[in-house]
Length: 322
Ligand code: DGY
Image (tube, rainbow, N blue to C red; front, top):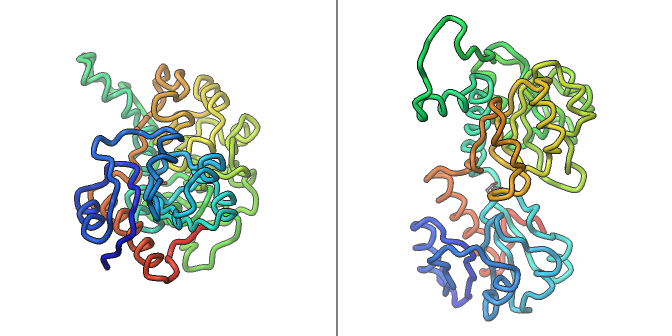
């Protein structure tokens, strides 16, 4: 549906997505994939009707308030919208959309990878082989923890949490969860509901975080909550770094209260993550790869474009969050 609307595309997107964008819209692309500052975001939006951006751009109230009045929509190439001040957007009459569903399988895969990587000491093992430090094999060499049959505890049983839970069942794990509201029996799929985070933590052999970053979930996994975990629990985070209090988790990893952590997201990512994570051997760390598959990144782009198409043809976008 070609229109004469102009879209400010803040990052380099997959070729297929940019081809559809170029076919249907006038676009200000970012071929060098420069990470724009706030001033550059405001500048780049001049003369545009909408912005297609990623979680890497901070659309805080200050930036949103400086956007030109021609901007009708911010279409996010992400499910998470914590980088976007939704009430500022609402106040300025800007529609905000996200890309749910299409990245749930990919992100759940990474959650399972993080769980196994942490439980089976894959971070240490990879380093040992690649740095030519592997000189022995013996019956007590690099023993990890088996997850089969253990309890998999999910905080945030949304789309990703539900799929991660189904995958964990493939390892005969017993699924427990806490969510703002209890799911219906179908969605619950045999998982055991806990009406408080505290009650869930007590049974979390593996704790997998899947809740969005909001003011309420900020620092949710703090020292007090970690103390409620079983000795030697495993922590997995594929949601947002903000959900974890890094000092508390690092201290629990040092004392082995937490046996290991598999983390795909961090406070201060990419270049200012807590430096002590790098010194720990009981972590399995990935650079925010949750949705990073060819299929998923194309699907995220198409979903963001479906939302823009709906807006510019006068309809309601399916993924409106503000
Ligand atoms: C998301 O969609 O929120 C992922 O974290 C990638 O931005």
